[in-house]
Length: 206
Image (tube, rainbow, N blue to C red):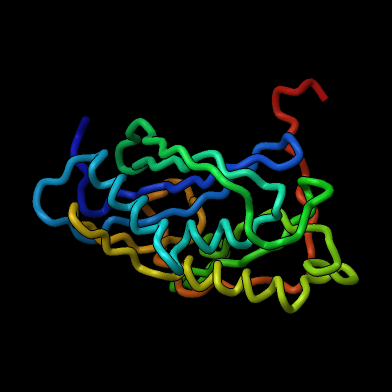
């Protein structure tokens, strides 16, 4: 498999299941530095280890998930300028918000913006939110759950420097086409209102 290079875009897809629905949350990174010749799987292992650490992206993601969300795996894939085969890291365990979600399509929203102005550089994530009163109150995210979302948004903004197999990863905004025109992430912040996700119907015959 070809070796990673500076400038490659790496798509991180955090996957889980809630109420029999598959939930996939994506984060794009730009490789800004590498220490010598680095193997693809070694670098993705190192990235997974870093993102799974205390206060990091995956840990904060899991903490914000409903208690009946179940973590299944994370996909790591270089998608630009060449698309590599994805590298899968199996995971397990429930979400840590303490709230149960009675439906999979009620979501909290975190907005991401780039350091370049323009609609192309505004994106975000929609993540399931527990429907208990501890997480939702009158259509708004409660103060307690907002803390978890702020922590998650803060982790989205962190540059990641892996150890061992050393690489530096800069968070990007959204997934523009082509992905190698993405901008460095400037800020991320939660919205106060609860949203509804619409199910994709492609190929379902409806």
